[in-house]
Image 1: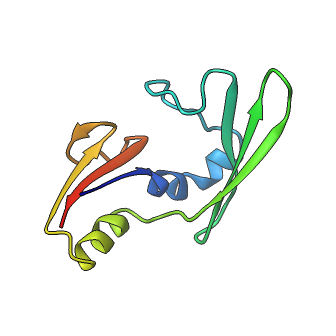
Image 2: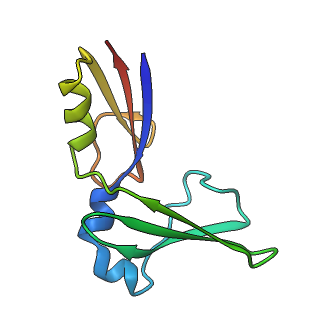
Length: 109
């Protein structure tokens, strides 16, 4: 069994212009880094997303570079490598919701 959690990168790619102009916020429905650390994309390309995380208590910053999977890419890769059962969730609810913050997959080989 394999459980994977994936950010909705397709939304970030599709909205890159407005996000890079400062229009990015989490839905607030889920805790990502606690309530004192805030993250935002500062670079978005088809090959990578660079996130900047700022601790509001210390003003220290950290960076994380991520590969932006396209919609369906992770699920297709899981099927290709032999997982017979792949159940997808969107923000912890069964199914695919294109406006979700995160996708989860429960896979059985």
